[in-house]
Image 1: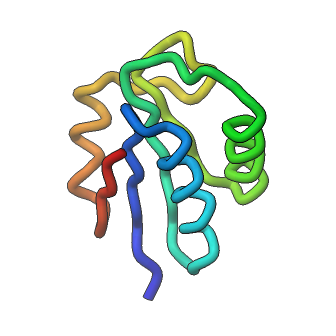
Image 2: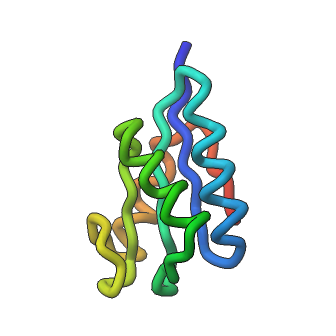
Image 3: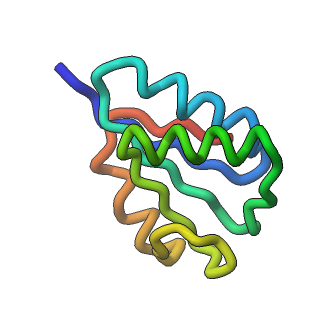
Length: 89
């Protein structure tokens, strides 16, 4: 049975996005949350974000400087109990 997985990314952005891409290999629903900071793009981050988009992974952020679907910290916190697994980075 497919699991619902939330990946929260705040400090280790490269590692978190790489993990999110790897998690798409299983038949699970993956959602990524970019927390607090603006996501500074470089080649690796751009490739990982593009790959996540290709796999229809939803990406949310609580920072309006990020181009992703916006949610407040409170809205994100309210969503987390819906997930089978929450992985923080």
